[in-house]
Length: 132
Image (tube, rainbow, N blue to C red; front, top):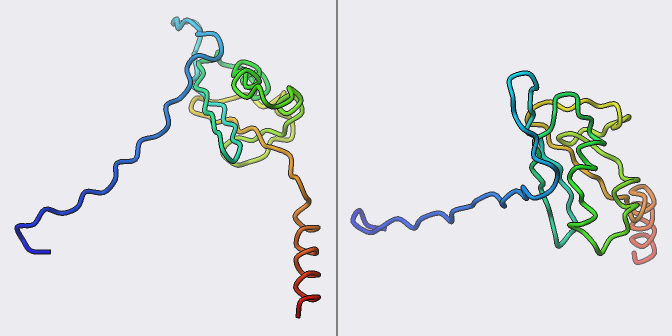
């Protein structure tokens, strides 16, 4: 590239817009602290990040209910969400109904595994041995 030729610009990457329609909007006032949290769920072909404003003291389970994910994923049974494991920023929660959220937390809803990872590895190893 010569000194006068324009440099190709890098593609601009913008985050997907958060869905602000789910959950009640909590009025902010000086006596109650309002936290901004997100609830995330993803399928291989569809992802949603729901931004919520919640009262201080809200738990991960309560935020999941406020996000109303079943309405955003009507193709899935409601149990997908009511029985799901939850985490915050990649760390699984042992008791999501007791986990108090902090400002900026992202509650992640984990899908169940279709196959146990150990079983999948054993199956691949067996296929590899039989084809050798």
